[in-house]
Image (cartoon, rainbow, N blue to C red):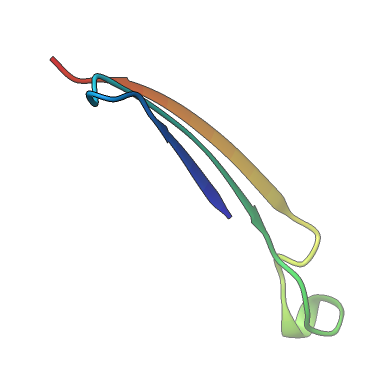
Length: 46
C-alpha cells in the first residue's frame, strides 16, 4: 500500500508506504512471512 500527498502547486510531497508478506507454509513457502515494512518520505521541489 502506498499513499502520496501533494501540495498544489507541487512544491512539497510526502508519502507513506507499507509492505506485508503473507502466505506460504512456514519458512518453505514464504521466508518473509513474519516481516512487515513501513517507510515514509518528504520532498521539496524548487
